Length: 482
Image (cartoon, one colour):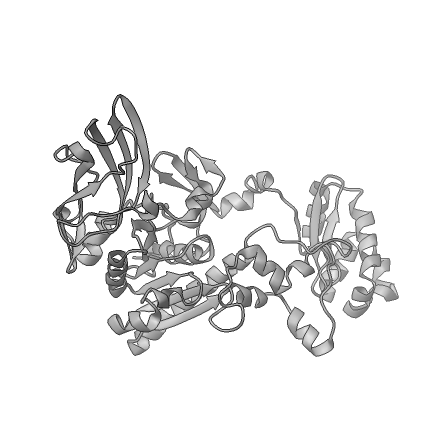
Protein backbone atom coordinates (compact mmCIF):
# COMPACT_ATOMS: atom_id res chain seq x y z
CA UNK A 1 0.00 0.00 0.00
CA UNK A 2 1.59 3.22 -1.18
CA UNK A 3 0.30 6.76 -0.77
CA UNK A 4 -1.61 6.84 -4.08
CA UNK A 5 -2.65 3.19 -4.36
CA UNK A 6 -6.12 3.03 -5.92
CA UNK A 7 -5.80 6.35 -7.77
CA UNK A 8 -6.20 6.05 -11.54
CA UNK A 9 -4.23 8.51 -13.68
CA UNK A 10 -4.62 8.93 -17.43
CA UNK A 11 -1.44 10.40 -18.92
CA UNK A 12 -2.14 12.17 -22.22
CA UNK A 13 1.07 14.19 -22.08
CA UNK A 14 4.28 14.02 -24.12
CA UNK A 15 7.96 14.92 -23.81
CA UNK A 16 9.02 15.90 -20.24
CA UNK A 17 6.86 18.09 -17.96
CA UNK A 18 3.62 16.08 -18.07
CA UNK A 19 5.26 12.64 -18.13
CA UNK A 20 7.52 13.67 -15.23
CA UNK A 21 4.44 14.76 -13.26
CA UNK A 22 2.78 11.39 -13.93
CA UNK A 23 5.93 9.45 -13.13
CA UNK A 24 5.94 11.01 -9.67
CA UNK A 25 2.33 9.93 -9.14
CA UNK A 26 3.14 6.44 -10.43
CA UNK A 27 6.15 6.13 -8.14
CA UNK A 28 3.82 6.59 -5.20
CA UNK A 29 1.36 3.91 -6.24
CA UNK A 30 -1.06 5.52 -8.69
CA UNK A 31 -2.16 3.36 -11.62
CA UNK A 32 -0.80 5.58 -14.39
CA UNK A 33 -1.87 4.71 -17.93
CA UNK A 34 0.11 6.40 -20.68
CA UNK A 35 -1.98 7.04 -23.78
CA UNK A 36 -0.04 7.17 -27.04
CA UNK A 37 -0.95 7.55 -30.68
CA UNK A 38 -0.54 4.37 -32.74
CA UNK A 39 3.00 5.23 -33.85
CA UNK A 40 4.03 6.23 -30.34
CA UNK A 41 5.09 9.24 -28.33
CA UNK A 42 7.73 11.24 -30.27
CA UNK A 43 10.00 10.82 -27.25
CA UNK A 44 10.39 7.15 -28.19
CA UNK A 45 12.62 8.24 -31.05
CA UNK A 46 14.80 10.78 -29.23
CA UNK A 47 18.46 9.73 -28.76
CA UNK A 48 20.39 8.25 -27.15
CA UNK A 49 19.06 4.96 -28.58
CA UNK A 50 20.23 1.65 -27.12
CA UNK A 51 19.11 -1.63 -28.71
CA UNK A 52 16.28 0.20 -30.41
CA UNK A 53 15.00 1.88 -27.24
CA UNK A 54 15.26 5.57 -26.38
CA UNK A 55 16.96 6.18 -23.04
CA UNK A 56 15.30 9.61 -23.12
CA UNK A 57 11.90 7.87 -23.13
CA UNK A 58 12.87 5.36 -20.46
CA UNK A 59 14.09 8.16 -18.16
CA UNK A 60 10.84 10.14 -18.02
CA UNK A 61 8.08 7.59 -18.65
CA UNK A 62 8.59 5.15 -15.79
CA UNK A 63 6.03 3.71 -13.36
CA UNK A 64 3.33 3.48 -16.03
CA UNK A 65 1.37 1.10 -18.19
CA UNK A 66 0.68 1.86 -21.84
CA UNK A 67 -2.22 1.92 -24.31
CA UNK A 68 -2.48 3.22 -27.87
CA UNK A 69 -5.47 5.25 -29.08
CA UNK A 70 -6.01 7.18 -32.30
CA UNK A 71 -7.27 10.55 -31.06
CA UNK A 72 -7.86 11.67 -34.65
CA UNK A 73 -10.76 9.25 -35.04
CA UNK A 74 -14.28 9.62 -33.69
CA UNK A 75 -14.11 6.18 -32.15
CA UNK A 76 -10.76 6.91 -30.57
CA UNK A 77 -12.15 10.01 -28.91
CA UNK A 78 -15.13 7.97 -27.71
CA UNK A 79 -12.78 5.44 -26.12
CA UNK A 80 -10.77 8.20 -24.45
CA UNK A 81 -13.98 9.71 -23.12
CA UNK A 82 -14.87 6.32 -21.61
CA UNK A 83 -11.45 6.05 -19.97
CA UNK A 84 -11.70 9.60 -18.60
CA UNK A 85 -15.02 8.68 -17.02
CA UNK A 86 -13.17 6.04 -14.98
CA UNK A 87 -10.12 8.13 -14.10
CA UNK A 88 -9.34 10.08 -10.96
CA UNK A 89 -6.73 12.30 -12.63
CA UNK A 90 -6.08 13.24 -16.25
CA UNK A 91 -2.79 14.96 -17.14
CA UNK A 92 -2.49 16.69 -20.51
CA UNK A 93 -0.05 19.12 -22.07
CA UNK A 94 -1.66 19.93 -25.39
CA UNK A 95 -1.65 23.53 -26.51
CA UNK A 96 -4.28 25.51 -24.63
CA UNK A 97 -7.75 24.88 -26.09
CA UNK A 98 -6.93 21.55 -27.78
CA UNK A 99 -8.85 19.43 -25.29
CA UNK A 100 -11.88 21.68 -25.74
CA UNK A 101 -11.70 21.29 -29.53
CA UNK A 102 -11.77 17.52 -29.06
CA UNK A 103 -14.82 17.83 -26.82
CA UNK A 104 -12.76 16.63 -23.84
CA UNK A 105 -12.18 19.89 -21.97
CA UNK A 106 -12.64 20.03 -18.23
CA UNK A 107 -16.26 21.19 -18.28
CA UNK A 108 -17.30 18.43 -20.69
CA UNK A 109 -15.31 15.79 -18.80
CA UNK A 110 -16.61 16.92 -15.40
CA UNK A 111 -20.19 16.65 -16.64
CA UNK A 112 -19.58 12.91 -17.06
CA UNK A 113 -17.20 12.45 -14.14
CA UNK A 114 -17.72 15.19 -11.51
CA UNK A 115 -14.89 13.79 -9.37
CA UNK A 116 -12.34 14.07 -12.17
CA UNK A 117 -9.18 16.09 -11.60
CA UNK A 118 -7.67 17.45 -14.81
CA UNK A 119 -4.10 18.73 -14.73
CA UNK A 120 -3.40 20.96 -17.73
CA UNK A 121 0.24 21.83 -18.39
CA UNK A 122 0.91 24.41 -21.09
CA UNK A 123 3.69 26.68 -22.23
CA UNK A 124 2.11 30.00 -21.35
CA UNK A 125 -1.23 29.41 -19.62
CA UNK A 126 -4.81 29.82 -20.83
CA UNK A 127 -4.90 33.61 -21.18
CA UNK A 128 -2.75 36.21 -22.89
CA UNK A 129 -1.20 36.77 -26.33
CA UNK A 130 1.07 33.68 -26.28
CA UNK A 131 -1.60 31.07 -25.51
CA UNK A 132 -1.43 29.39 -28.90
CA UNK A 133 2.35 29.22 -29.14
CA UNK A 134 4.28 25.96 -28.85
CA UNK A 135 6.87 26.00 -26.09
CA UNK A 136 9.82 23.89 -25.03
CA UNK A 137 12.22 24.19 -22.14
CA UNK A 138 14.96 26.29 -23.71
CA UNK A 139 12.41 28.69 -25.19
CA UNK A 140 11.06 29.26 -21.69
CA UNK A 141 14.56 29.61 -20.21
CA UNK A 142 15.09 32.46 -22.63
CA UNK A 143 11.71 34.14 -22.16
CA UNK A 144 11.74 33.81 -18.36
CA UNK A 145 14.98 35.75 -17.99
CA UNK A 146 16.90 32.77 -16.60
CA UNK A 147 19.25 32.59 -19.59
CA UNK A 148 20.23 36.25 -19.15
CA UNK A 149 21.16 35.49 -15.54
CA UNK A 150 23.40 32.55 -16.50
CA UNK A 151 26.90 32.71 -17.97
CA UNK A 152 29.74 35.19 -18.15
CA UNK A 153 29.21 38.99 -18.06
CA UNK A 154 30.83 39.39 -21.46
CA UNK A 155 29.26 36.27 -22.95
CA UNK A 156 25.84 35.46 -24.38
CA UNK A 157 22.80 34.38 -22.34
CA UNK A 158 23.28 30.72 -21.44
CA UNK A 159 20.93 27.77 -20.97
CA UNK A 160 21.26 25.44 -17.99
CA UNK A 161 22.41 21.85 -18.43
CA UNK A 162 18.98 20.28 -17.85
CA UNK A 163 15.29 20.83 -18.56
CA UNK A 164 14.74 22.99 -15.51
CA UNK A 165 11.48 24.56 -16.76
CA UNK A 166 10.00 21.16 -17.59
CA UNK A 167 10.97 19.60 -14.30
CA UNK A 168 9.77 22.39 -12.05
CA UNK A 169 6.48 22.53 -13.98
CA UNK A 170 6.12 18.76 -13.63
CA UNK A 171 6.64 19.12 -9.89
CA UNK A 172 3.98 21.84 -9.71
CA UNK A 173 1.65 19.62 -11.71
CA UNK A 174 2.12 16.74 -9.27
CA UNK A 175 1.64 19.06 -6.29
CA UNK A 176 -1.49 20.45 -7.90
CA UNK A 177 -2.88 16.95 -8.43
CA UNK A 178 -2.24 16.06 -4.77
CA UNK A 179 -3.87 19.29 -3.57
CA UNK A 180 -6.89 18.61 -5.76
CA UNK A 181 -7.17 15.04 -4.44
CA UNK A 182 -7.15 16.38 -0.89
CA UNK A 183 -9.77 18.99 -1.80
CA UNK A 184 -11.90 16.28 -3.42
CA UNK A 185 -11.70 14.24 -0.23
CA UNK A 186 -13.22 17.23 1.57
CA UNK A 187 -15.83 18.32 -1.01
CA UNK A 188 -16.43 15.31 -3.23
CA UNK A 189 -15.79 17.45 -6.30
CA UNK A 190 -13.04 17.33 -8.90
CA UNK A 191 -10.88 20.23 -9.95
CA UNK A 192 -9.14 21.77 -12.94
CA UNK A 193 -5.46 22.27 -12.09
CA UNK A 194 -3.55 24.57 -14.42
CA UNK A 195 0.16 25.31 -14.53
CA UNK A 196 2.50 26.49 -17.26
CA UNK A 197 6.21 26.44 -18.02
CA UNK A 198 6.72 30.19 -18.11
CA UNK A 199 5.16 31.05 -14.77
CA UNK A 200 6.61 27.97 -13.11
CA UNK A 201 10.16 28.86 -14.07
CA UNK A 202 9.75 32.52 -13.16
CA UNK A 203 8.52 31.42 -9.73
CA UNK A 204 11.96 30.02 -8.82
CA UNK A 205 14.09 32.90 -10.12
CA UNK A 206 15.01 34.07 -6.66
CA UNK A 207 14.27 37.75 -6.06
CA UNK A 208 15.02 38.90 -9.62
CA UNK A 209 11.55 40.20 -10.51
CA UNK A 210 10.74 41.68 -7.10
CA UNK A 211 14.14 43.35 -6.89
CA UNK A 212 13.79 44.92 -10.31
CA UNK A 213 10.25 46.17 -9.68
CA UNK A 214 11.26 47.64 -6.31
CA UNK A 215 14.72 49.03 -7.13
CA UNK A 216 15.07 49.10 -10.91
CA UNK A 217 18.19 46.93 -10.64
CA UNK A 218 18.21 44.01 -13.09
CA UNK A 219 20.11 40.76 -12.43
CA UNK A 220 23.52 40.48 -14.06
CA UNK A 221 25.44 37.46 -15.30
CA UNK A 222 28.17 36.72 -12.76
CA UNK A 223 29.42 33.35 -14.04
CA UNK A 224 29.24 31.28 -10.81
CA UNK A 225 29.21 34.02 -8.21
CA UNK A 226 26.19 34.18 -5.92
CA UNK A 227 24.74 37.71 -6.18
CA UNK A 228 23.29 37.64 -2.66
CA UNK A 229 26.11 36.33 -0.47
CA UNK A 230 29.90 36.61 -0.25
CA UNK A 231 31.84 34.50 -0.35
CA UNK A 232 29.70 32.39 -2.64
CA UNK A 233 31.42 31.04 -5.71
CA UNK A 234 33.15 28.11 -7.39
CA UNK A 235 36.90 28.10 -6.74
CA UNK A 236 39.64 26.18 -8.53
CA UNK A 237 41.93 23.85 -6.64
CA UNK A 238 45.01 22.37 -8.27
CA UNK A 239 43.10 19.34 -9.57
CA UNK A 240 39.44 20.35 -9.61
CA UNK A 241 36.80 22.76 -8.33
CA UNK A 242 35.09 23.38 -4.98
CA UNK A 243 31.99 25.45 -4.27
CA UNK A 244 31.82 27.54 -1.09
CA UNK A 245 28.69 29.27 0.19
CA UNK A 246 28.98 31.32 3.42
CA UNK A 247 25.48 32.57 4.18
CA UNK A 248 26.19 33.86 7.69
CA UNK A 249 28.89 35.87 9.43
CA UNK A 250 29.93 32.83 11.46
CA UNK A 251 30.46 30.80 8.31
CA UNK A 252 32.68 33.50 6.84
CA UNK A 253 34.73 33.72 10.00
CA UNK A 254 35.14 29.93 10.03
CA UNK A 255 36.42 30.05 6.45
CA UNK A 256 38.97 32.72 7.35
CA UNK A 257 40.20 30.55 10.23
CA UNK A 258 40.32 27.47 7.98
CA UNK A 259 42.58 29.43 5.62
CA UNK A 260 44.63 30.72 8.60
CA UNK A 261 43.79 34.21 7.34
CA UNK A 262 42.31 35.83 10.46
CA UNK A 263 43.71 39.09 9.13
CA UNK A 264 40.85 39.12 6.61
CA UNK A 265 38.39 39.41 9.49
CA UNK A 266 39.89 42.79 10.36
CA UNK A 267 39.98 43.99 6.75
CA UNK A 268 37.37 46.78 6.38
CA UNK A 269 36.45 45.40 2.94
CA UNK A 270 35.22 42.16 4.48
CA UNK A 271 33.78 43.17 7.87
CA UNK A 272 30.15 42.38 7.10
CA UNK A 273 27.97 41.03 4.28
CA UNK A 274 27.36 44.44 2.70
CA UNK A 275 31.09 45.22 2.51
CA UNK A 276 31.92 41.72 1.26
CA UNK A 277 29.33 41.95 -1.51
CA UNK A 278 30.77 45.31 -2.54
CA UNK A 279 34.25 43.77 -2.63
CA UNK A 280 33.31 40.27 -3.76
CA UNK A 281 35.93 40.18 -6.51
CA UNK A 282 38.74 41.01 -4.07
CA UNK A 283 37.46 38.42 -1.60
CA UNK A 284 37.31 35.75 -4.31
CA UNK A 285 40.92 36.57 -5.18
CA UNK A 286 42.07 35.84 -1.61
CA UNK A 287 40.20 32.53 -1.46
CA UNK A 288 41.39 31.48 -4.88
CA UNK A 289 45.02 32.22 -3.99
CA UNK A 290 44.76 29.92 -0.99
CA UNK A 291 42.92 27.11 -2.75
CA UNK A 292 44.88 26.85 -5.99
CA UNK A 293 47.94 25.65 -4.09
CA UNK A 294 46.07 22.59 -2.78
CA UNK A 295 44.17 19.62 -4.16
CA UNK A 296 40.47 19.03 -3.70
CA UNK A 297 41.36 16.12 -1.42
CA UNK A 298 43.45 18.43 0.77
CA UNK A 299 40.97 21.31 0.92
CA UNK A 300 37.73 19.45 1.65
CA UNK A 301 38.80 17.95 5.03
CA UNK A 302 39.94 21.40 6.18
CA UNK A 303 36.63 23.02 5.23
CA UNK A 304 34.69 20.20 6.89
CA UNK A 305 36.76 20.58 10.07
CA UNK A 306 35.72 24.24 10.30
CA UNK A 307 32.08 23.59 9.27
CA UNK A 308 32.36 25.68 6.12
CA UNK A 309 29.48 24.88 3.70
CA UNK A 310 31.28 23.48 0.67
CA UNK A 311 31.42 20.66 -1.81
CA UNK A 312 33.53 19.34 -4.67
CA UNK A 313 32.31 19.81 -8.24
CA UNK A 314 31.67 16.43 -9.89
CA UNK A 315 31.14 15.35 -13.45
CA UNK A 316 28.85 12.38 -14.02
CA UNK A 317 31.57 9.67 -13.97
CA UNK A 318 32.80 10.99 -10.63
CA UNK A 319 29.28 11.50 -9.28
CA UNK A 320 28.19 7.89 -9.69
CA UNK A 321 31.26 6.72 -7.73
CA UNK A 322 30.66 9.10 -4.83
CA UNK A 323 29.86 7.28 -1.56
CA UNK A 324 26.94 9.58 -0.78
CA UNK A 325 25.42 8.91 -4.20
CA UNK A 326 25.63 5.21 -3.44
CA UNK A 327 24.45 5.51 0.17
CA UNK A 328 21.27 7.27 -1.00
CA UNK A 329 20.52 4.40 -3.42
CA UNK A 330 20.18 7.08 -6.10
CA UNK A 331 19.96 4.51 -8.90
CA UNK A 332 17.71 1.47 -9.12
CA UNK A 333 17.78 -1.20 -11.80
CA UNK A 334 14.47 -1.74 -13.58
CA UNK A 335 14.03 -4.74 -15.87
CA UNK A 336 13.01 -3.76 -19.39
CA UNK A 337 12.13 -6.28 -22.13
CA UNK A 338 14.99 -6.64 -24.57
CA UNK A 339 17.37 -4.50 -22.53
CA UNK A 340 17.59 -6.33 -19.22
CA UNK A 341 18.28 -4.23 -16.12
CA UNK A 342 18.20 -0.49 -16.91
CA UNK A 343 19.72 1.88 -14.29
CA UNK A 344 17.25 4.71 -13.65
CA UNK A 345 17.06 7.38 -10.97
CA UNK A 346 15.13 6.35 -7.88
CA UNK A 347 12.34 8.54 -6.46
CA UNK A 348 14.00 11.14 -4.17
CA UNK A 349 11.11 11.13 -1.65
CA UNK A 350 11.18 8.44 1.01
CA UNK A 351 8.37 7.29 3.26
CA UNK A 352 8.49 4.69 6.00
CA UNK A 353 7.31 1.11 5.59
CA UNK A 354 4.98 0.14 2.77
CA UNK A 355 4.45 3.76 1.78
CA UNK A 356 7.92 4.04 0.30
CA UNK A 357 7.78 4.91 -3.42
CA UNK A 358 9.00 2.52 -6.11
CA UNK A 359 10.17 3.26 -9.64
CA UNK A 360 8.59 1.01 -12.26
CA UNK A 361 9.58 0.69 -15.90
CA UNK A 362 8.13 2.53 -18.86
CA UNK A 363 5.69 0.65 -21.10
CA UNK A 364 6.33 -0.72 -24.55
CA UNK A 365 4.08 0.76 -27.21
CA UNK A 366 0.51 -0.44 -26.61
CA UNK A 367 1.79 -3.14 -24.26
CA UNK A 368 -1.09 -3.09 -21.78
CA UNK A 369 -4.01 -2.22 -24.06
CA UNK A 370 -6.03 -5.39 -23.45
CA UNK A 371 -5.14 -5.44 -19.77
CA UNK A 372 -6.23 -1.83 -19.21
CA UNK A 373 -9.44 -2.15 -21.22
CA UNK A 374 -10.35 -5.15 -19.11
CA UNK A 375 -9.62 -3.50 -15.78
CA UNK A 376 -10.97 -0.03 -16.53
CA UNK A 377 -13.83 -0.76 -18.94
CA UNK A 378 -14.66 -4.38 -18.19
CA UNK A 379 -13.76 -5.97 -21.53
CA UNK A 380 -13.16 -9.69 -21.49
CA UNK A 381 -10.37 -11.67 -23.20
CA UNK A 382 -12.57 -12.40 -26.23
CA UNK A 383 -13.37 -8.72 -26.66
CA UNK A 384 -9.80 -7.67 -27.40
CA UNK A 385 -7.86 -9.66 -29.95
CA UNK A 386 -4.13 -9.77 -30.24
CA UNK A 387 -1.94 -9.94 -33.38
CA UNK A 388 -3.75 -11.47 -36.33
CA UNK A 389 -3.16 -12.54 -39.88
CA UNK A 390 -5.09 -11.55 -42.96
CA UNK A 391 -7.22 -14.44 -44.12
CA UNK A 392 -6.54 -15.66 -47.62
CA UNK A 393 -10.21 -15.67 -48.64
CA UNK A 394 -10.98 -12.71 -50.81
CA UNK A 395 -7.32 -12.03 -51.39
CA UNK A 396 -7.65 -12.48 -55.15
CA UNK A 397 -8.49 -9.12 -56.74
CA UNK A 398 -6.50 -7.42 -53.99
CA UNK A 399 -9.09 -7.67 -51.19
CA UNK A 400 -8.13 -8.80 -47.70
CA UNK A 401 -10.55 -10.23 -45.14
CA UNK A 402 -9.56 -8.83 -41.77
CA UNK A 403 -10.37 -10.00 -38.27
CA UNK A 404 -10.02 -7.16 -35.81
CA UNK A 405 -11.52 -5.63 -32.69
CA UNK A 406 -14.06 -2.84 -32.92
CA UNK A 407 -15.87 -0.52 -30.54
CA UNK A 408 -19.66 -0.36 -30.54
CA UNK A 409 -22.01 0.82 -27.79
CA UNK A 410 -19.33 0.61 -25.14
CA UNK A 411 -18.25 -2.91 -26.14
CA UNK A 412 -15.88 -4.49 -28.59
CA UNK A 413 -17.10 -6.67 -31.36
CA UNK A 414 -15.39 -8.61 -34.12
CA UNK A 415 -16.71 -8.18 -37.67
CA UNK A 416 -15.26 -9.41 -40.90
CA UNK A 417 -14.32 -6.40 -42.96
CA UNK A 418 -12.65 -5.75 -46.29
CA UNK A 419 -9.70 -3.58 -47.13
CA UNK A 420 -9.00 -2.63 -50.71
CA UNK A 421 -5.29 -2.69 -51.48
CA UNK A 422 -3.83 0.17 -53.57
CA UNK A 423 -4.35 -0.81 -57.20
CA UNK A 424 -1.31 1.16 -58.33
CA UNK A 425 1.09 -0.94 -56.27
CA UNK A 426 3.03 -3.44 -58.42
CA UNK A 427 2.28 -7.08 -57.79
CA UNK A 428 -1.15 -6.37 -56.33
CA UNK A 429 -4.25 -7.92 -57.90
CA UNK A 430 -4.84 -11.30 -59.47
CA UNK A 431 -1.15 -12.10 -59.46
CA UNK A 432 -0.86 -11.75 -55.68
CA UNK A 433 -0.04 -15.04 -54.01
CA UNK A 434 -0.67 -14.07 -50.37
CA UNK A 435 0.44 -11.73 -47.64
CA UNK A 436 0.76 -11.32 -43.89
CA UNK A 437 -0.65 -8.45 -41.84
CA UNK A 438 1.15 -7.47 -38.65
CA UNK A 439 -1.02 -5.65 -36.14
CA UNK A 440 0.12 -3.37 -33.34
CA UNK A 441 -1.81 -0.76 -31.43
CA UNK A 442 -5.16 -0.36 -29.77
CA UNK A 443 -8.49 -1.71 -30.94
CA UNK A 444 -9.58 1.83 -31.73
CA UNK A 445 -6.92 2.40 -34.33
CA UNK A 446 -4.93 -0.63 -35.33
CA UNK A 447 -1.65 0.17 -37.00
CA UNK A 448 -0.91 -2.07 -39.98
CA UNK A 449 2.51 -2.81 -41.38
CA UNK A 450 1.65 -4.59 -44.61
CA UNK A 451 4.01 -6.68 -46.66
CA UNK A 452 2.59 -8.19 -49.83
CA UNK A 453 4.21 -10.92 -51.83
CA UNK A 454 3.37 -11.30 -55.48
CA UNK A 455 4.92 -11.98 -58.85
CA UNK A 456 8.06 -13.20 -57.12
CA UNK A 457 8.58 -9.91 -55.32
CA UNK A 458 8.03 -8.71 -51.77
CA UNK A 459 6.56 -5.20 -51.72
CA UNK A 460 6.30 -3.01 -48.63
CA UNK A 461 3.15 -0.92 -48.75
CA UNK A 462 4.19 1.07 -45.71
CA UNK A 463 2.25 1.71 -42.54
CA UNK A 464 -1.51 2.06 -42.46
CA UNK A 465 -3.78 3.44 -39.75
CA UNK A 466 -7.29 2.70 -41.03
CA UNK A 467 -10.27 4.36 -39.46
CA UNK A 468 -12.36 2.12 -37.28
CA UNK A 469 -15.71 0.95 -38.61
CA UNK A 470 -19.09 0.30 -37.07
CA UNK A 471 -20.53 -2.13 -39.61
CA UNK A 472 -19.13 -5.28 -41.07
CA UNK A 473 -19.68 -4.04 -44.61
CA UNK A 474 -17.66 -0.81 -44.31
CA UNK A 475 -14.27 -0.47 -45.96
CA UNK A 476 -11.67 1.28 -43.78
CA UNK A 477 -9.41 3.73 -45.56
CA UNK A 478 -5.88 4.80 -44.81
CA UNK A 479 -4.87 8.43 -44.24
CA UNK A 480 -2.89 10.38 -46.81
CA UNK A 481 -4.00 7.96 -49.51
CA UNK A 482 -1.65 5.20 -48.34
